[in-house]
Amino acid sequence: MAVFRETVPRTLEEKLFELNWSVVLLLTLLGAVGIGMLYSAAEGAWNPWASRHLVRFIAGMSIMMAVALFPPRFWMGMAYPIYLGSLILLVGVELFGETIGGAQRWLEIGPVRGQPSEIMKIALVLALARFYHDLPQDRISSPFGLLVPAFLIGAPAALIFMQPDLGTTVLLVVTGGAIVFLAGLSWKVIVGGAIAAAFAIPAFIRFGLEPYQRARIMTFLNPEADPLGAGYHVNQSMIALGSGGLTGRGYVEGTQTQLNFLPEKQTDFIFTILGEEFGLIGGLAVLALYAMVLANAVAIATSCKSVFLRLTVMGIATTFALYVFINVGMVTGMLPVVGVPLPLVSYGGTVMMAVLFGFGLVLGAHIHRNADPPRGAGLFG
Image (cartoon, rainbow, N blue to C red; front, side, top):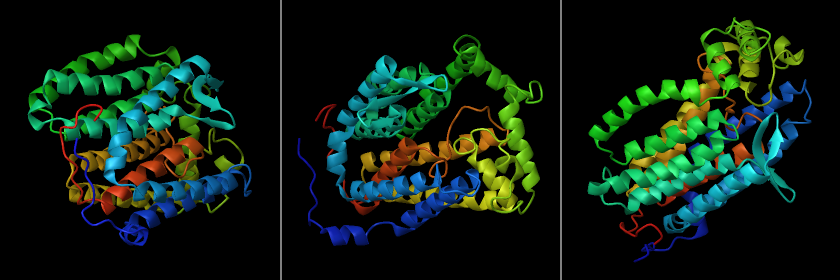
């Protein structure tokens, strides 16, 4: 296989100059929001969350910059090994994982503890982007073009669902489906898949979910049915958001937060703190930051010449958008509570590193947007 190389090699300084600094600034602002909200969540203290969030964010931004400087051919070559490694880690979670809060999602290797499911979100994007880069356009809707992506998506989704982690499973499947769609899947297959899903989803909810997972869905439909049990989280979140009004109660002045009525305030429900203390205006301002990040990512994707870079960027953007959509939806009562954090704002090291690694790929796509490696390299070329 011929390997793509830049016609005129660029220096490190030239690549740094070509970085999309608008994206870097927007991500930095989101990280700063996270530090501020975690400081408030700890009742005006840097420990235990804000200081660690700051250190992790600085480390993650350094990783992001490093990732951006590698050429596309490097990430194309690493796509399948990263996916395979992530899949092995997920199997390791099933065999040796640490159980926290009733879920076996964490794997501890020496001094490092993390969630391999977060790594898989990036690995899946890279693997699918590589697969479709190599696959001829006329084979996308062929049996081979359907079965391989189905396995790439289904294998990790099944392992993550068994942890159990419904939120990440949904996010992974939707992201994978979005990449398959963007690759150019036939509308006949799309319509057929939609009809099959319409029949399969109710059966899955009835027979495939654990009782507590079904209870979350019923709570979403009627949160007042069990206000002190399954509905407690979302009810407290709604009270906090409502008390914030238009402009909020003031920084570190949120009663639901400071009096510890709000559960999981540093992770899943951190957007609620923002809404209580800064009101509707503050919440919309942060959502505007997310929207600007996504707009920049889509613009970068459309500027890329290669299928691999376009699908990689759109896959990362889809994952990022789903994080925000699901998190804000669940804390506002519009979606069931499924445990999805708010990217760069919620506390959590593995999620932050995965998100910033992903945006390193996005920034790298912008730098190397004119690169177009040869297609048809095969599965392991």
